[in-house]
Length: 181
Ligand SMILES: O=P(O)(O)OC[C@H]1O[C@H](OP(=O)(O)OP(=O)(O)O)[C@H](O)[C@@H]1O
Ligand SMILES: Nc1ncnc2[nH]cnc12
Image (cartoon, rainbow, N blue to C red; front, side):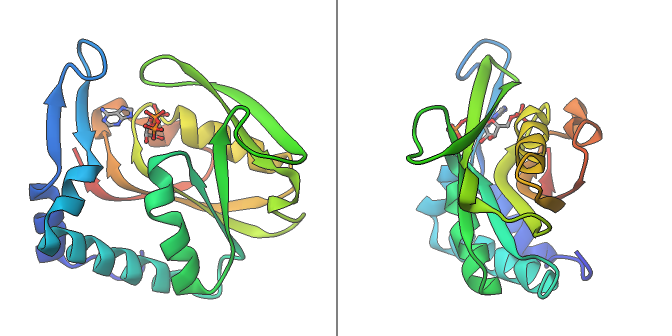
């Protein structure tokens, strides 16, 4: 981001992210983005932070991709602010039409992602959005997947970064996070 995000909004947002030990499996401290949407002030702060972030990218991005499912909470809004298309990256078997596919590892388990072949055009500049980066497996796989479409991933954006896992090191594009845990 060219200008630093508003620190009061960041604090409000962080204060409303609930953490759940041992979910969905032992040893995982689950950071729940949905808890933000139960509080009006926190939800408005998130909205404002997203808008400022999106506007800082004006003119630099042609298409916004987001990762199922929690990335879908933010991708369409960022696309709206920038006036550019939003395209979903989904888990296997959910998208109709011709798709590109890739398998990847998670903090827990493995998964397989797909994107519609006509979701991005060769040479387009893309932003990928998600709620959280843990190991970086999902964003890394998404970057690889979009490479097969000939799309250039300029930046990846997440609300939360689990900094100890250093997932950003794995991701081949720049990663921007609003909050670090
Ligand atoms: O950096 P990583 O180790 O890849 O982990 C991050 C990913 O894990 C979570 O999604 P999850 O697969 O749990 O799916 P969901 O959003 O559908 O709940 C999260 O929303 C990210 O997409
Ligand atoms: N610790 C965590 N909290 C929420 N979502 C996650 N996805 C992967 N790790 C996660």
